[in-house]
Amino acid sequence: MIIVGIDAHKQLHKALALNDAGTILDQWQGPNSPEGWHSLHQWATTFAGPRQWGIEGAWNYGRGLAQYLVAEGETVYEINPRWTAERRRKARKPGKSDKLDALAVAQLVREDSSTLPQVTADDETAILDLLVTEREGALTEATRLRNQIHQLLLQIDPEYKAHLPGLKTQAGLRMVTSYTTTSQHALDQQRAAVIRRTAERLELALRQAKDLADQIRKSAQLHYTPLTQLRGVDLLTAGALAGILGPGRRFLTDAQLAAHAGVAPLEASSAGRVRHRLNPGGNRRLNAILYRIALTQARCCPAAQIYLARRQSEGKTRREAIRALKRYLVRAVWRLWQECNPKSAHHACLKRAQVPTYEQAAWSGAGAGGPPAPAPLQAKKAARHHSLAGGS
Image (cartoon, rainbow, N blue to C red; front, side, top):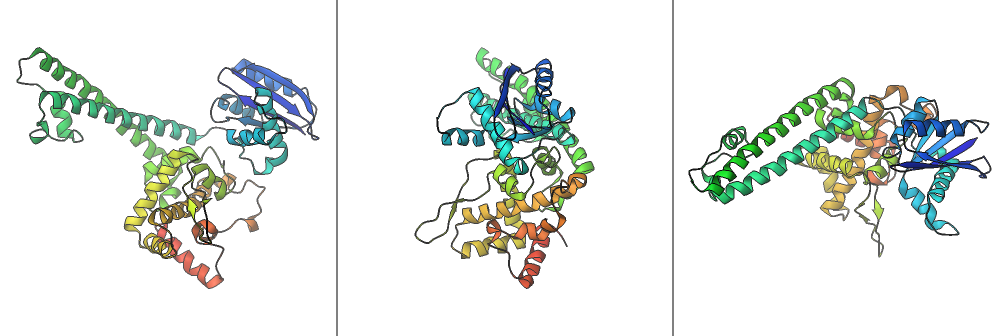
């Protein structure tokens, strides 16, 4: 087996090849371009035997290379930069270079390939991720433009809110699009003109955001409706989740997904009291989605309310209980994602006997209340989970 580790950069990539024994065979450096990807692949084929690739930044600077290699039939793994940084810190001779990073990537693949997330070809989720990112950008731009209009209106008419509709309403948008002022001062006239032009840009941003939302809902309804079984998840949220969870089945377990989302608990126990603190890492967009789902369930789902009350009765604060609920929700999201990807549901390498049911995956483990309960209690918890997931 030949293992190739790649340290990906914006302009160039550094690759290093190892054999089964961990001996360095050769190294390569070339541009981050289609020609460079082809040259790298040709270089790797000079070594006899099957190959495994690890790319640091497979969804960032190394995405083009990763997709090229997957299209060529290669096995490619995604390597988190934090893992290589930890390797460097533990090295006998500390230091940092492209060669050391590529070596750390190759060693990770050599030792832990069975647990690493495998890169698959882009699918509908890549399109959804692009649409969701663009929509979020349009909404951010709309907020910025509203603030700009608000500032200008305050300079012309500090009491404009008393006689103008809110800027978030359609009536308010129409009003500022044709806004005029009675002041004859040249500066105020220019401010009014700026308000009208800014309102036109705001109207465009909102229209684009609405069109993008329609596209996201349509795609999510075609492919990812199982995610909407979870209370607090509509088609827009399902589309955002799919864009993050895909392509394919990137996360082998719900624990990997929890770590990626930054909801895996970080223990901060002391004096015999077991506590878990906030995890500041992970994908913050996914973390925010889970937080909104948790708040929705805490507000209108009786099962979630009972769960949070039980957690608080155990001595946890409200925030800690919400964090526990988020970890619980990751299990539910992970299991529903398997229903969205039936062809890769168990990756052929996981035995069916080792894969828990949806209810077991949601309720078992420390993040959802401790170790698995006895069979009668498991049945009760499964029923509560069915209610929490939106079942009748």
